[in-house]
Each structure stands twice: as C-alpha cells, then as structure tokens.
Amino acid sequence: MSKTQAERPPHSVDPIPAMDPADAPPLSPTVRRHLGQTLRGHYADSLSAPVGERLEALLAQLDKTAG
Image (cartoon, helix red, strand yellow):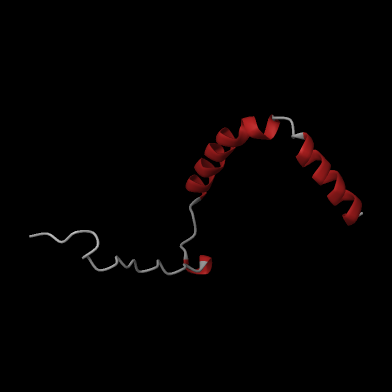
C-alpha cells in the first residue's frame, strides 16, 4: 500500500557541487565558434532594439556618477 503525501518523508535533494571553471576542459575552437555564432543569432534582435526610456535614464544617471 502506498503512503499519502503527508506520510512520506520530505524529499531531500543533494545540491550539485559548484564546478571551478579552472577544472573545466577548454573548448575547442570549433565549439567556441559555433557557440559565438549561435549566441549572436539569438541576441541580434535585442542588440538592435531601442533601449527603453527607463533604462536610458538609468544609463545617463550612471554616466554622471562615473564621469
């Protein structure tokens, strides 16, 4: 007989250990080129889209404090 949800012990998930980027194998030039082309294709529209007024105001404010 199966237990109801209330009778089951809480489900515990082991966290995925963080991977140090230095331990990752390097990507081949072919993979890097493919990733770059794919990302450019996905973000091309958003990069050419106009910036919203609110974001433009925030960027102007940041320029004033940085300059």
